[in-house]
Length: 245
Ligand code: ADP
Ligand code: MG
Image (cartoon, rainbow, N blue to C red; front, side):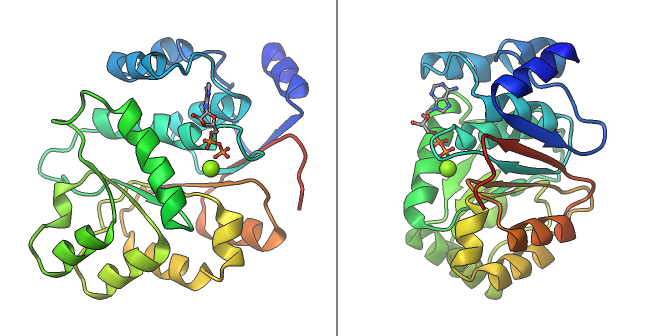
């Protein structure tokens, strides 16, 4: 507890909500606390991610405690890994049985940002190819899904922009009913660009009963905060540095 207070003070961070888990202190902490898959840890170290950043310390503990999350941290503070690490851990350890299908959905405002996320995802999932099938919803993949050349249930994690996703949702060419983890990245930009409606519509197709939702942003304007609270259940809110909005 005391260490957590010191940690938060030194990072100018504010964490609010019910039953807040303690932040992790190192990536190795994830072994004892969350039984993290060894290969995931090896991949992180191989990619020269040695020490978690402040937002990673908080988000990893919160997400692996199965809590909804509103995370606000400056650009360049490592928000991508803050959501990818717990997402991968959860999906590779989830019992799937016959219930396979898209379980992780990451929404990003632009294709360029979606590619950046996908690149980091590939870097830290090396060697998981048999257990984890990740894809970016490219134009080609969208076409294949629309033409029923590929079934969406072949994938475990999809990274996409809202517009591209909405298009195939309208064609009923993607099954989002198994999505157990929804991540909205750069939520402020998404809402600035007027994607609120699309995001709402996507949400109505994510019907999995125990879906966990996370939102990441560099700023949390009040509209985004309201939206987050309207779609989340008892979220924990993490703010690193100063709230700029
Ligand atoms: P944000 O989304 O918060 O703007 P990114 O997730 O894009 O930030 O990360 C910014 C940069 O920091 C990237 O180049 C990423 O590889 C690097 N990075 C992220 N986490 C770590 C870490 N724990 N150790 C070292 N570098 C990191
Ligand atoms: Mg980012």
